[in-house]
Length: 314
Image 1: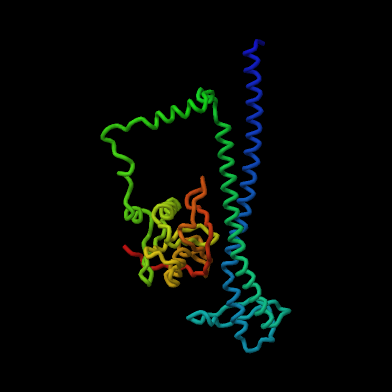
Image 2: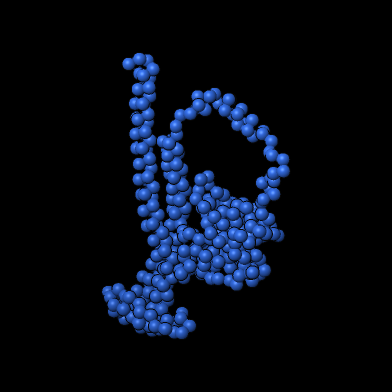
């Protein structure tokens, strides 16, 4: 075997070993992504259950309203005082406990579920960022696996950069329109990407139509001082409460109505109440390589809102 053949043989062995290492790395990353996907589904189920805990408070309040609080049983049918039509509701009971003890139990369960919502939401947010990092890692491995040697790989970096610079300096053909001339106006972007509402206080509220539209609305339409909202722990539309006067804090009623829209245009539309994150657009950023609609919040606050639709502005 001559020197050239020996060199090619060694390169072949090195290439096979490299491919095995890359494949093993990708398998590990894919397994970790699947593991975190399962955890994400579990956390979302916990969040949904916690968001539906309003019924526990209703049970507690109805039991507190009973005249004989010492009675026991397996269930109690009572008029629902919170129903405008006064329909009846069946309340499951722990038979060993009195009505007042069952009421206290339901109240404790409600408070526990309510406290868990911010914790679960934060875990979901951290998990999403971890999964973004894993997907980026998988993408790098796939690219490294598919990369083939080329002449440019053997060129000094200065030579490649100079060639790229020459290409960048190449003049455009006379008569061609610049990219800026094709850029739509802000009004056009709003019409294309958002549903437009008006709060009872007269503030404009924009709701993203899709995941891609969410990115455009948040990153290109919204201004730094605008208020930004999104339901916690569920997929849904980005909501922007316009703030042309650059108020330091959003008016309470307009903020609540924007939060109601964020809850309505989300996967939690049928929940009695949900948690909604809000902040100013300047605290919202897009992680590199993140899927459409996914953003990172530097800081935010939360409020509870009932999903509700406002009349849309045409």
